[in-house]
Amino acid sequence: MTHDRTVLEARNLSKTFASRSFLGRTVSETKAVNDVSLSLSAGKTYALVGESGSGKSTTGRLLQGLISPTAGDVRVIGADGISSEQSTARANRDVQMIFQDPYSSLNPRRRIRSILEESLRIIGERGSKVLRTRVDEALSAVGFSDEHAQRYPHEFSGGQRQRIGIARALVASPRIIICDEPVSALDVSIQAQILNLLRKLQADLGLAYLFITHDMSVVRYLAHRVGVMHQGQIVEEADTADLFADPQHDYTKRLLSSVPIHHPSQRTTAKG
Image (cartoon, helix red, strand yellow):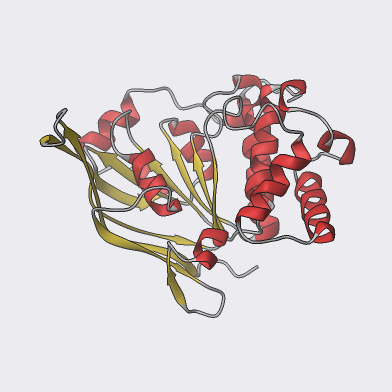
């Protein structure tokens, strides 16, 4: 896989949410994201870190196209070097998301195969043979088989459900995956397994990750580059080793000093 090639660029992104009165008048405005620019590279992980309310999850939703920016733009750069707006069909296929909560992000009334096939139908795939093949490949990539595809979400553990969430992201054959706190809802005993799986998939497929987290041990383990968000802005950006060795911004220093940093591989592992 070709690494260090830019696959996504966000330029001067801002997002303002308006609070309106009963009559529809704007009462107040909150700028959740303020002039954020970043880029993602093939085969690399960019960690977006900050405390709750810093704007990192809103930034992730902007990059994935779930919400539209108030200002700025997101462009996805294809293998041919041609860029496209995030609102286009190709961009929507290229950028997928793994959500924080594996319990609520899967439809409890559908079997796993049906959940993954629906993700393909959303991007325009219709042939039954293509659907079956792509679903089988995605499930195999996360360690599951056809037998697992016939089950319902409630039949799986939390770690297994997050593997299904990863398979749902993979089934569209994306080049970019937005990971929104994907291990924070899991027991610490299985977090390392999911992180190792994400690393393996990145190495095998050349995926670019935006990894949204507040866990600095995860950042150190997984990320190549870090953007530190505070009050809607990226206040510091650096390669991971440089950021941990010599943080520049006072907020980054507080963030690093406020939590003990343990390597994820030192956590107890259990089947998940």
